[in-house]
Image 1 (tube, rainbow, N blue to C red):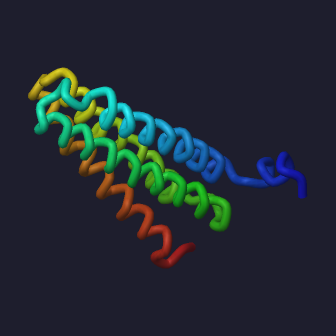
Image 2: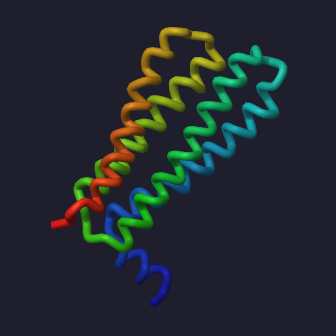
Length: 136
């Protein structure tokens, strides 16, 4: 089977979340490196720590998106699996995104957005686990 045939055989959930995971992981690595090299000495140690937390959770959940994509290759299309992927992606945007912006801007009220991203992460992992509970 050629690479193009394999891609066509892959379900839309698998393709969407595998690609999102790859791109998100690349961005997480780039932003982590940016924080370690370009922001060092320009931000307070507290803001650097916040940036690092954002990058860590961003990368962890990028791997989660890859897992969703890989599972999508082996399981039948599942609404729970799709929602797990979207919830993980939304979590990255809200949790890590708010922490990145908070780190460089100092806008403290952005910290109120972060827990919504954390809840999205929790929901994503629960939905992912639920895909293996009595599949019908």
